Length: 514
Image (cartoon, rainbow, N blue to C red):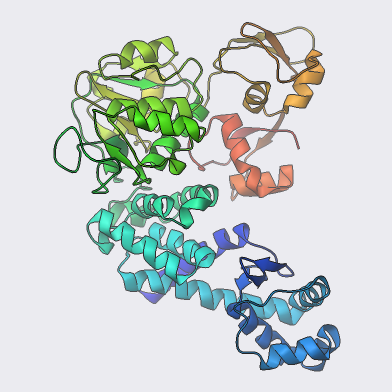
């Protein structure tokens, strides 16, 4: 790989890492057994290396801030693998880290370190730029051992390091014994990496993230490790419950939930299941997935050894999505009963072959079914996904509420929401970018935990703020500027029904309350 491309990858990875870590003056006195410092949260001996550079540049000025003892230790010590910091030391270290020289040293070391992370990924054999961005963040968070372990696992799944895609490395990370514990960060980095190097991903390596040329992913439960319908609990091959590229069955219908947020949660649940090698294929004990998923509140990355089949996987993912009216019965869905169950829960059904036979019409979070045979979940939006949504009567990127809404007269722009089975006041508040406390106050609800099916909830219109996207904007930047916290960008996505982080100049976005 050319050095210029490696530097570009490192620069994009740096943006993600900086957003996930601290600031220049940050000091964590005890981060898993040793202190971490600075904008990249250098840990242990790497923190010591940085501090040595700073005190060398500042000399007596550093000694005046740190005191003789701490200054001497930094200049002479060789091992800070278990060095923690007292409150007094934290204050001194923070001051020197935030100095002009401290910031300069951090900028230089960050550039050096993050480029080394990318180089490590290239040495393993990873070629895909999106995957290398993800790999770099992995290494910064978990160290070289963790990134190597995940990278090798991804290569094994993909059939070679050169075939690793963003989907493969993300799946491997979620399944990792250590990095899988940080699923929120992994999902965040995955989403950010998807928006990068789209042309390279699509044209050079057929990766997820391109447009017309990209390889559309699906998530499914396939055949057991024995090549039969039953196998041992757990994914013995890594391919029993997995992410694959689109294939036509042909499908009898596609089911699309009207809420974009629900579709996204369904897709994320399937991705988590595909990344969890505890979940295998077995029709005889297909319900064990639901049993264990229920015990961990349907967080599928945390499920222990169990089995499922294609339809029970989608049933569990639908429950995990929070779709109103979806349950897992005594024996779960089958491909023959899914259509009726999905229609009853309000999913839009499309049977037109034009929307079933081509990956270009795939919708992320949609369920594709061949009755009596197989079912999968779309994990990418194809180039023409908006046409599929339009066919279903859904505006692209605009979620429909699971309950009905109508204009009210009590206030300007007020709406009235009818509570559905499975709703909570928090869920309803999230749909409209407000808080359950404000909805409770506005509606005179004494106990926010007690609402009933059919109850009318008034949604105040006056609290909805909009923002017009400008050239160069990102969801993160908008959240940081308008809400004071860039990490709240997902709230903007949910409120506006966005299925990706892509926005365009002139677009009007609704904003949640601060």
